[in-house]
View (spheres, rainbow, N blue to C red):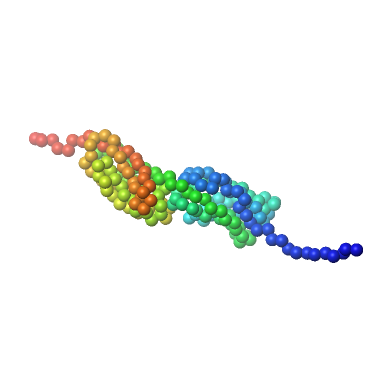
Length: 193
């Protein structure tokens, strides 16, 4: 007769079982799936510098799936954490933000002497940015914030009539982004008056 019995405990740990895709640019839709959490508990998804980019409730089996959009953050490897505020357990995964540098300008046309606002994203954090304008190599310099974004202003200097390129260059990464400003004609002086 074998009446021997053994018992033990087995702890199921939380796990991220799928991250799709695992790399992309700002604006990419990301789906994260996980399991090993408690039944019907809220899971908060942390993404890089954002403490809560999504919230999802687990199933009766402790699994979850949620989709979120990559927001403005510096390029490079970013941590994703699925965290339960109730049980204080978490699971981690990593997402690589690819460079997707871009700039916008306002206004997009004007005369020499107009102020031009340049906003950019997709650069590295705390990166020095050089703004060039047509034939002027350095029109302005600025530094990105912790999300790899910046905003700066310059005054349009003397350039030929027509389309003029505004270019932002990351000094450390050499990543660039361009926009077009249209120089409009302007009569400066009428003589004799």
